[in-house]
Image (tube, rainbow, N blue to C red; front, top):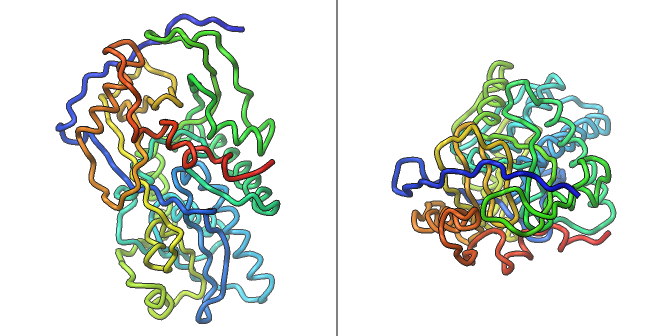
Length: 367
């Protein structure tokens, strides 16, 4: 077993009323399972790719590969190659799907009522882990998830050092991290095995814990890079808000439509299983001396733009942030690191025991 010297401690100075200090977004959680399937509606082939909760960035390239494969299978089955494709949504699911469809030589137009930098994807923390996601325990769905994880991780890792904001980092946690352990369960050997530590190497810590090796994807770098790449390859972004699915089917000329509308699918496609889960983040000043992730007891992610402290899980459609709750997140984490008196974990924290049924993806599957 390894005993490590203390790693640097964050400066927890924080003013929740400062511009940009607090961020909130609505995770597109879907009860039962995310939706990744194709159907023919009004003569159009519609592929639904939404409902990934807090795991959108993590699963994005893998889901995009499934979308690409469905398009190819459709072409083979009909012996028709539709060159024009509409992608609905400019979050990470839409951008990555569009990228792989452009790779096929298709002409892609992205329709969205939000710019990529206004989406929940851009506001995410960015650790590569299966977070706040429910998926079916059916054998075929488990196989699908295995494929998605394998492709997504491989593609993200291959982009390290290429300007996509992806890096390989250590994640330290007091408790086992369910969002990473589920990857070990589903795809053994994809990630390095976790390491037990008799004491976590931080000020204020005296308990044992774990060290994981995973990826950090920085949304403020990754999302704009995808957008720039797509525009450079001729993809058009159209600001458009659709009223309902009939509006989509009657107004678009494209015969292939990729529905990556996330939470918008609740109304647009009349999906009652969509559930908005607000996540709030406190954004501390950037601190380059911090080169680790800390999670499963609240989380702290040092990125180039900020040190991100999160997160919350709140069932609400309100996308505005709450400065008091962001401050509470920071004060709790400062207590964990011995910089303030310890405080109980807030009940709205993503890692509070009462939220475990939502947060732990293993609770929805069987191995």
